[in-house]
Image (cartoon, rainbow, N blue to C red; front, side, top):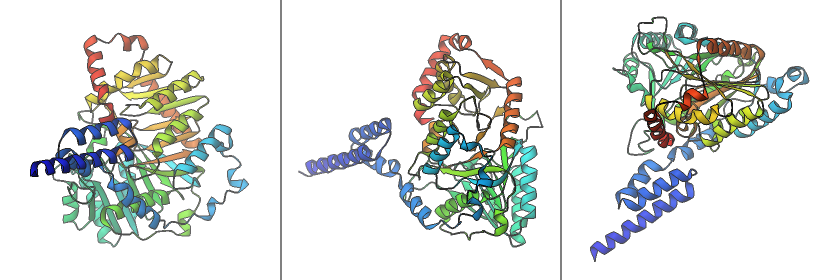
Length: 475
C-alpha cells in the first residue's frame, strides 16, 4: 500500500510539472523536452524541472524594474521640429522601426549623443582607464569576463585608486565569466577594498542553479557623463598588436557621451540591485543632459527577465526595414528560422545583404553548426565573408548606412533566450560612415564564400555540420 501511495504521489508530481511546462514554456521544443524529463524520470524528473526549468528571474527582476525607474526623461527629449528635422527615422521604413523599438523597450530614443568606435584593447582600454582616473563621483563597471592578467590588474589598480579617493565604485562580474582566469579578479578587488559582486552565482537555493543564464553585458559609466559599451571584455586577449599571442581577439567597443549614458547607468543599477539588493543613487544633473553630438541613441536591455524577446524582434524588424544594404558582423551565427527567412527575404527584395563571420572560431562546434545554415543563405544571394585570424568577436549591424545596432548580442539562441544582454541602437550619419568604412575594409581583407565551395565540402564535413546543427538550440 505504501508503494502504491508513493507511486501515485510521484505520478501527480510528474503531471503537475509537465502541465506547468506545457502552460508556461514558449518554445515547443523546450516544452516537449521538459515534459519528457518529467514523465520518464520518476521522482527526479519533476525535481530537475522545478530546480532548473523555472524562470524565477523574470518575476523578481520585473518588480525591480517597476520600483527602480529613477532617471526622469530629460527635457531634451521634447521632440521639437528643430531637433528632429534632419533625422532619418522620418523615412517610412525607419519610422516603422522606431515605432517597434518604442513599443518593446523601456527607454526613449534620445538625441544629443556622441558615439565613438574604439577598435580593440589598444584603443578602448586607455580611454576607459583615463575615465576611471578622472572619475569624481561614480564608476560602475559590468562585464562577462574580467581576467586577472596584466590588463585586468591595471583596471583593478585604477578602480582601487578611485575608490580610495572617495569615488563610489561598483563592479559586477558574471559568476561563470570570472572563472576564465585564476585567481579570480574578484578576489584581487576585494583585497583592495573595491566593492564587487557576482551575477547569478551558482546555488541550488533561491534563484536556482542557472548555469545557462549569464550576465553577458559590457557596461561602464563614469560620473553619469561618459559610458562605454560593446562586445569587449576586460583582459589581455583584446590587445592584438602582439601577433605572437595565439588567443588574441579582435573586437570593437563604443564610447558614449550625452543623455543616453543614463540608459547604461540605469541598466547597471538594475543588475546591481538584482545581484546585491543595493539601490544606487541616481546621478542625474543638468550637465548629464548637455548635448554632446548629433546621434540619436537608445540603450536596450534584454534577457530572460523581460516580457518581450526584444533582440529577436528588433533585429528582425531592422532587417525588414532595409532598402539598400544590410551589413552584419557576428562571431557566433546560429540563426533561428525567422532570422533565416528575414535575411533571405531582404536579399530577394533587392537589398545587398552581407554577413561577416570569423574564419577562426574559438568554439569549433559553433562553427560546425554555422556552416550547416550557410547554404540556404548563399542560395538566395546573401554575401558571406570569412574574416582572417585572429578571432573576430565584433557584433555590428548596419542598415542602409543609417541605423546601427551595436552591443553584446550574438546571433544565436543563447543571446536571444538565455543571456542578459545590452545593446545600443544609433541613428548617426557620422557613426554609420565609420562603420561602413570598417565593413568595406574588412571585405577587402576577407575571403568570400561561394555556393559552389559550400556545396563541395567533403561528405564527412557535411555530416559533422549537420550533427552540430541538431544541437543548435543548446549551443
